[in-house]
Image (cartoon, rainbow, N blue to C red):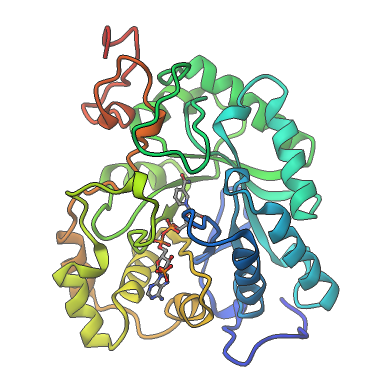
Length: 352
Ligand SMILES: NC(=O)c1ccc[n+]([C@@H]2O[C@H](COP(=O)([O-])OP(=O)(O)OC[C@H]3O[C@@H](n4cnc5c(N)ncnc54)[C@H](OP(=O)(O)O)[C@@H]3O)[C@@H](O)[C@H]2O)c1
């Protein structure tokens, strides 16, 4: 139970009213969080200010990552919130992620400790392996850029990263560990080898990309799905855009339901996510937007018919294709996602 808080804004949502998921450890995680990737469009200072406002507005889950290059500024916002008595560390659920260039032996702990220092906290609630490849691209690079050192997924290599994550739990630096941008074949390859199981899987999820098989697999294996790009990332960088992409906020089904509820189509996407069972982490630096993104989880739910209408509207349209992580010899971005049920690598598929 949260104690009486100073500095809560009038439009705030009571965090106690926000639904929660329970991780396999018994720890609770809020059903909506705020994203912190500025899509090369918003500054670290703007994002930190949004985190400050969001927590005052009732958010308790913050999705961070070292590659977003704003953890220091977000740390400043958190320090302000703690010092003002707006929230305590224990009331927050903070996610961090290790970036692809920090997979080497000893580097995961170094990266985690850096995030802790930057965020000004002494533990993270959840620490994710951001991508299952050690393939580095410079932040902000364009979609055609390739790193000649890039390599396909190898379960043995991934497990070396995971062992380091397990060590973070043992050291008390993180409470849970999880994975991001995985596929069923990759999960099948690594889950049996995990000493500490992933508590959550972060994956792209929005009405136009529902990943029903992976979503079901994650839930059936006792992990909580966290959905990124829940609104279809309308401000995403150019490198993540192609001509075929479907805009979720313009899908006729979403627009129709939005009209019926008299809300922005973005709000329908978030309501759908919460009711569908994933944890959406919408991003916004605009107070009216981020407050409504949380409030919509506790007001005016979608009907069963509307949920079904959205389920049928799935376009299987992946937006974050990850093409900058491709290795020499890979054919296209689909090689990253094991669409035919096998892991695409040098050995399994020749030159693949
Ligand atoms: N694990 C991973 O690999 C991974 C990958 C991608 C993202 N993520 C995480 O997921 C978070 C969310 O994804 P995202 O930021 O790409 O996309 P998103 O949350 O789907 O879209 C964010 C954009 O939607 C618009 N928006 C937000 N609330 C709105 C509202 N109420 N009404 C109208 N428009 C609204 C804003 O556009 P304007 O800016 O134009 O206002 C905002 O920039 C990220 O911030 C990051 O934390 C993780």
